[in-house]
Image (cartoon, rainbow over all chains, first blue to last red; front, side, top):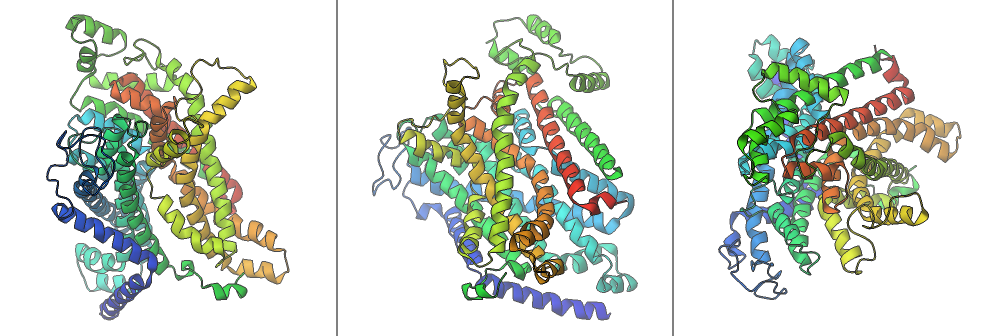
Length: 304
Length: 329
């Protein structure tokens, strides 16, 4: 009993401390701000541009320079670049979040059950995780996406989940192993709780910060990999996303023909979204490991 | 030694898993080489002629799947890789791969190792001068650069250094077309100038992660008692930094390096594609575009083997540097 009574308030206090730390870290604040802006763009793109069908060919004159009408100019095919960018946010963000979420769920399932079950089950799950960790997944993704034929969003997400879970599973297994013999779990076992109850209500809450960090890592991986796949033309070329914009820009030789914004703008967005996940992740690292936090300059004299 | 043998066993298993995936994915997915070849020849050949052509190239759809699988495994491992059915119709896969391999090894291999070593060194120094200018700016900058897509950094470099300067630095191919490959200074210089931008791309995007992990490992190690003891003994800063702290902090970084190689290959494929650099990654992209199954299979196997060999090398280095790994079991 005492285990439960002691565990619950510490978890809550740890969470409260985490939020204060997130609010105080400039890295986390910047990351959250970028992420928030993209969420708004993805939710209501029509507020930010008057164009309604950004993919329609020849809606405007081709190759217009940036102006107040077309903030980033128009493409070779007479499409408004700013409008494509705004509308493309949704698909890129959805891919990142959905693929990141499913990959995290998969890594929690596999990592935690491997650690908790132990024995042969652990050996087999760990081996599968290690194989996936080491396989060069990107060539596999390219081959898979080619054979799958239909270049739909679902294929891209499935591919990202299948290849993106192993890193997290490895880390989560290690942490779950270290938790296994803690007293509060022992007491839950003595109380006669079911295994599923112990895993969901006792083990997982204590692992929240690592799970969040893994989600951010998986989301970052998905943003970058999805952009790479779409850039190679392995996404749906008729849909609007940053990666697809890059594909068409490359296809139409945007850099060489004097339309650099066509390829720079979507790349900046991919980088910004990726950076927001990476900054949040790094901030979490600093919160979890106080030694990594930035040192104030005046302490330098005392330092090593 | 037992540790290394166990790792070797694991690698054989991984290679088998990769080869098996490679065999079954094409066979359980829609689309077939026959269809691909028919599209490429624009229906000019009769189905029988196409079928015969594929059979002579080692394509046997009617045979028992298990026998095909065993034969496939044997052929892959013994180097009987068949012939390409892509743009170089009929050319042996081993020849095509042989021409591209040195370029990728030279560009991607050297750059990656260099980025890793340089990153570790910069990370070591940053952590040693905790709170200095480098250390306070560095983490944020590299968190951002490591989140940039490889290929886009390549595009940016092409724009700035090639397009805006009217081609001062070449932005595609391995060397100027028309030059005869030789060991003359002109040719070597030309090859190097063509490698500058792709190498810079890989360096810029890859180095950030290694600087950060090395810095974070170093900070943890610097708090250890043996570092304090080194100081108490009055050892020079350099000895403490390199032999006491960095040597220990380097070990987790090295296993991290081994684990991230798959990601490096992904970046390399895109970089080669962006720069039209005729290496293995470029070849893979082309073979995918042309549904050149034999070439694709071999390339995927080679990428897997490359990663496994690199990881195994890292394991040996770790076992050599770290007595604890040697003593395990």
